[in-house]
Length: 506
Ligand SMILES: Cc1ncc(COP(=O)(O)O)c(C=O)c1O
Image (cartoon, rainbow, N blue to C red):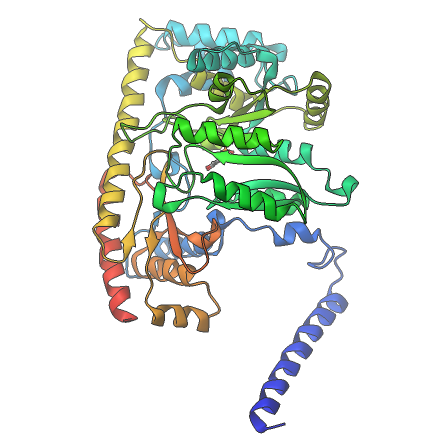
């Protein structure tokens, strides 16, 4: 053996020994019953980049700024998470009046400034709550009157009959997604993992949940060259390849898209439904951004409506949330899912499963009610509601345009238009020296880029690797949520950073 090989071998041995010793010492010195090796290993391996190491570093930087430390920037700009109110979006007055009235009806009734229509709505909702209190559990599926209002909303949106008994209130859409994935998971009984087709790039709730549940994620890549549309050949290939390692059962579609900011055309949705039908896959349609359409040529079509028009009857779960749209009430954790074409017996078992978690937050359910059931036309609350809603949507639309335009004006960055949702997912061309520098730090190149962006400018975005991307391509996800003035500042800083970064690693 020559000396270089010997040296390398001794390094490897040293590394192995030290890893082994570390584990041993950890086991011996820990008096805890739970160690990192004895917890659920699936949970250990879950990843959720939206709150990953870069946002965590952003929090540290914020604390440093608060404690008076000098940094190259005076504020951290949080463009990593779709949390509208955290970025100073104002709540809708009617929503907050109903919520505070429901939480404190005695005070509301004695306040002459609260509009009559708010008081009436609160009364109607509290009539549906146990003991007329939001502090009482509701039915596991949610307060009946709210389920009825949701069904009415869907009926008006799609022009289709909708049974309120197919609607379930959830703790944000996240709980709905997790519940349905867990419900279809037969990995343990089949001995082969249940497979779920998930778009790449994807919102990491799906990959994290599938990892936690021991299910198989079947990636299908969205077509970046074609506004992130779904390519049916890609779906076919992905499904075909997966058959030897799992039992495919469902396809997740996120429309409008996170992180892509795309809106699917009706034709694309039709083809996806036909594909699912041919391959006996149920559809999980994540439609939480249905109010966030920015491209004047785009339109939101629900999977339910398109499926009905095609005359296809597949099990479909559609999810909606109070966290997005124009209301952005993320912290209230309101959401719902609608089941279509479910066998009654199967539906009953799903509801039984939900009953084990008692119910979702009743205040969250009330937030959802406000979304689907705005104040009555002709009332003062209605006027105000329409103005506030339009103002938020108009401003978001402007920011969606601004962000894509600015990124496309920077050499080495390319972004599809932000047709919907709250994100852009631009592609970055990184110089090979930057890639080598990242590798030396054992970091993914897009992570390295985003970390350097954060450390030098305070802008916090999420590396594309947290959502998935084609190997050898690099992206990042930014929200369009910083308010307009902050957004202008952010885009100026971004541009300057990118130019300096490219020069540094040229
Ligand atoms: C596509 C998508 N689905 C679901 C969620 C979860 O939303 P929530 O649980 O707040 O309703 C989000 C949140 O960002 C999302 O982007």
